[in-house]
Length: 270
Image (tube, rainbow, N blue to C red):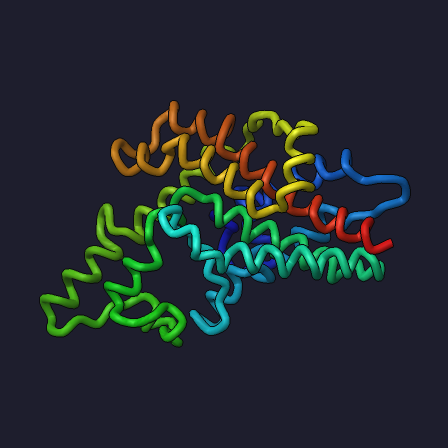
């Protein structure tokens, strides 16, 4: 999702989707704190978004140790994003246990970023495979800004064709970018739907773990068909309404439950 540019510390605070979701999720997690439990403030979490977030790495060192938050729903065995989420959950639990507030804010922010991107419909199209097909190399081997953005074909015609497929109108990356920016503009200054977390959600989380919870929410997100609707007809009022009232609340719910796992880990360790 769009998190603003990576050129300023406060970039994205106005229309950054990650930032908006983090703020809403932070309000909801308060309801799940017990006794004297603490959790990073929204302002502390937002510090690790934008330039200090996963997207910042893409600007500073393209494709070198860059978090890769893409999911192909047709390949459930591809769980690299879930492993990232789990690592952040363990680290957040440890930070909460030792009252390391800065580390807790970092882990909460980066976990939320991975969850949000993993549930972003534009990340579900097998974009990673298509990118590697066009560039002719694994994404982690594109080690410069030029290699990441300009495709070198076998000849001039092949170069133009592949770059048009990537950057051109309705190109795979252009569609990806414009969908995410559209989500940002659809929710700026407007209320989003209510986030519903019931006892059944918490029971499933405790019994089956976060991966099953994430998969269930992922299915709901896919069922909305927002990316397919955008690709077919572009942005319109109905699509914006679906994003505000249904898609964003589902993603916020996933973030809250992701953070909840770390709280449970910390409680169990005591």
